[in-house]
Length: 334
Ligand SMILES: Nc1ncnc2c1ncn2[C@@H]1O[C@H](COP(=O)(O)OP(=O)(O)O)[C@@H](O)[C@H]1O
Ligand SMILES: [Mg+2]
Image 1: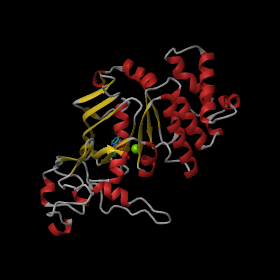
Image 2: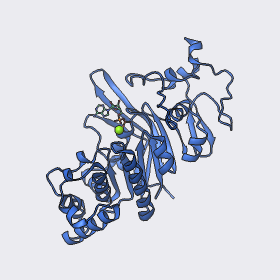
Image 3: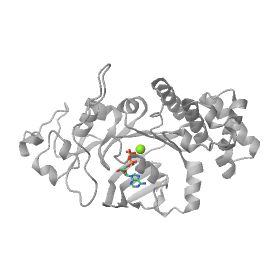
Image 4: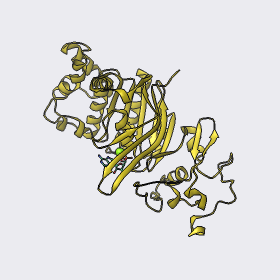
C-alpha cells in the first residue's frame, strides 16, 4: 500500500543577509495510514520547517525542491491554493507548541471550532456545534456548553491545547502534525496530553507526525522515528530499534543527554555549523568524538537492520559498538 505522505529528497533554501541558508538538505521519509512517526532533534535543526513544508506554509522567501512530495499519490508540488485549503481542512491538521498563537483571542472557542467544518461544507451550524461539543467532551474540556462560549484567555495552557486538539479533529483528518505539542506545558499536563493524542489516534485511525526534542516523548508515542541534525536526517528506523541500537554518534549523544533521575542534562559539546554555502561531508563531524579525515568528504548510508538506516562512515556491529578500528577522537586530527 502506498504511504499517505511520501517525501523524497526534500530541500529548503532560505536567502538571508549572510547568504543562502541551506536549511533542509535532502531529507526523505514517509508516513503510512494510522502510523505514528516522530521527528526528533535539537532546536534549529529544521523540524518545524519540515512540518511547514508538508502544510504548504513555508516562509515566502523559502525555496523548496524535492524529488517526491506526495499526499495520497498526488504531487503536492503542483498544489494550488484550493488544493492546499482542501488538504488543511480535510487531510492534514496541525497543532503547535503554543495554542494561544493559533487561537483567535477575540472569538469564543465554539465559533473557532466550527469554522473549518462550515468552510468545507461538512454540515450546517447545528451539526458543527454538535461535533464540536462531542470532541470537547472527548478531550475532557467540560462542561461543554460553557466551554463553547469561553474565550481562549479564560482557559489554562493545558485546556487550550486540548481545545486545539479537538479543533484539529473537527474535519476528521488522516494525519495530524503535532509540532512540540507539549513543550510549553508542565510535566503532568504533558503526560496527559500525550496519552490523549495516543488514545485519539487509536480511536480515529489517523496518522501522527510528532515533532519533539524529547526522546522520552518519542519512546512513549511513536512507531517509527527520524533523527534530524542540521537539516538532515542522520538516522531513521523503528523507535524500538533506534533507541536500543542507536548507530549514529549524534543519536547516541542525544540518548546520553537524557537526564536520569536527579541528574542534570548533559549538553553535546560544540555548536551546529552555519548552513551557508557549499556543505560537504558529514555535517556532525565537528562535534563528533569519532570523526576522521574522510568524514569531510564521505557520508555513506548504512543499515543496522531492515528499515533502520543511518548516515555515517562508521560501521556498527550488532551490539551497537563501533567496529571501525580507524575511528579515533577528533582531537587526533587537530
Ligand atoms: N522564516 C524563516 N526565515 C529564515 N530562516 C528561518 C525561518 N524559519 C526557520 N529558519 C531557519 O531554519 C532553520 C531551521 O528552523 P526550524 O525548522 O524552526 O528548526 P526547529 O523546529 O528544529 O527548531 C534554523 O536555522 C532557522 O533559523
Ligand atoms: Mg520548531
